[in-house]
Length: 151
Image (cartoon, rainbow, N blue to C red):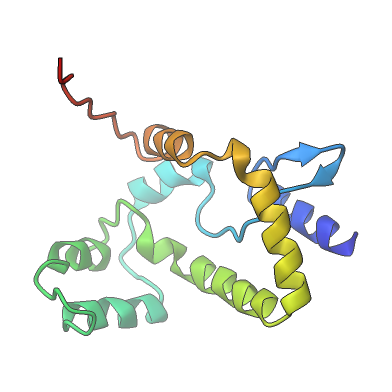
């Protein structure tokens, strides 16, 4: 029961609607990043300074540490240049916090198993097609790209 109260509090904090069945939480995820209502303001303000950890990762990408050095140059330029449309820099600290929570949960096999089962059981309403389309349209303002029919 403590775990469910913790999960509900986390979901409410991030303005995320969870699937509920008979008042029991059946879906869990680790959330991070800006809330959807914060995105337009964050984009408008831009960011001239990114967190140190993020700057280190961007430097590693620029230096080719992960391969494809030239391929990611424009992405690195936008994050470093304050025109970070996808808010990579502003979401980075929140991502690290979520990753630490994942690491902590994973270290407890019983807790991880319970969370995995609840997540799987409740994930049906979150089909990838619907979720991606919804996220693209509502968060990023991206229109669908329709393919011509084969007929």
